[in-house]
Image (cartoon, rainbow, N blue to C red; front, side, top):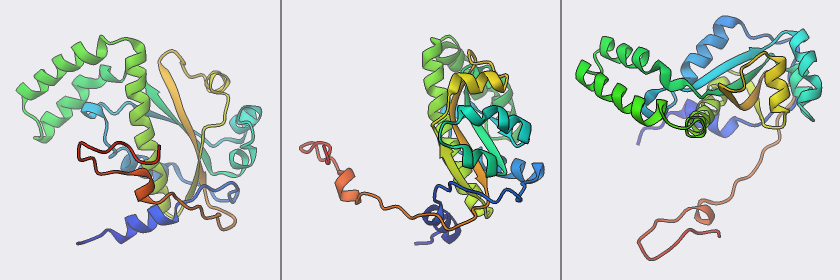
Length: 218
């Protein structure tokens, strides 16, 4: 069986880093490359509900200082902080997305129209909480992909869930009615080797259901 060794290395060597080299900067072009690769992540009906806000200016970081709780070191030493958001109105781009698929030859006009109608009925008209849940679920998928892509590019990351969501959205002038924050990702070059961490064995957390057994590890 062929294995992508680079991917396996990125998975095995990715660790959460708490302190970065503040002298390392990531260019806009390289950041765009990494985000572009990360957005190859799957999303429900390919609606791509993720949005990103990149915070790298020291002035903005200072405004966030009291809002990231115990994550100030990551904030101030990272090359950038990537705020991963879910767009609650993501389905509004259905026409644009599926038209791209038609132009690329991966979808017919009839299939495009079918999906547009389905998305309009099932998602666009759905309650905001349903749309929010869909958006956050897919935003978390792209967040993991960002961290693996970053490792493949030679950078380190730290996913951060400990921050004041409402206040952060206000400071960054983001519409909290439309967008839901998933997580911050600090990105840069680690200044020291990250601590390893062990995982539970698969037999403790997975079962092959035969109709007679339930979930293991309960």
